[in-house]
Length: 304
Image (cartoon, rainbow, N blue to C red; front, side, top):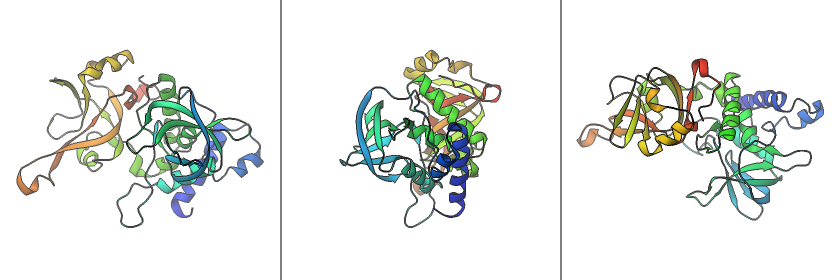
């Protein structure tokens, strides 16, 4: 891989190696210089569900085993591979693929149970550990530590969420990988137009909660005064108990600064032919406490 992203990947890997595998020899680090930094096994995942050998890495979030099974890495979100034609894709997909391929290509891997066992594409969803001789290493942790992935917020285990979010935060604060590109900086919640521009994409949004509003079966964390145009986080009331059990009292969040992650959605406004082009009131639906972090003086506290 060449060019600007190639330089980012190399710098990210070097920093990641120093951070997670400082005890390894200089020769070992040099041999790993093209890969996402190996990271020790995390507290993520349940019991072992399968083993195999990786034969192919089509992108930064998937591996194909020798027997043809496709495995999707749990707990993280990686940029898609760039299209062969056209523009408008999120940068960093090729770098994530290169890092994962160098880490897992031809490697024996162990798959651990994730929150879901498969997805709508028929892929196995699992936490993936390399079993190369020496020590087990987590593919998800390696990509996050190198700044080549983001935590997706769909993690049900507290210790796992804390571990992966800590790795992401460390890489972001160091400006590694994706975080060297302004595209991946958390979007200011008080700039709804910027949030709206990510409609249909995974994003991090950060800002101060202005008010908490309850309507019907939904709780709204409002980040502005104009509910019809400003960014908000929506939480179904049936999920409120999960946030409460995690130590996150939703109705007391007014005035607090949050970092929220998830897929940006929006409603079309207006009628007639302009309806499809007039979008407003972007929001992210939060169903898992791992999607919300307190920031500021709580910067490194994971609300789980």
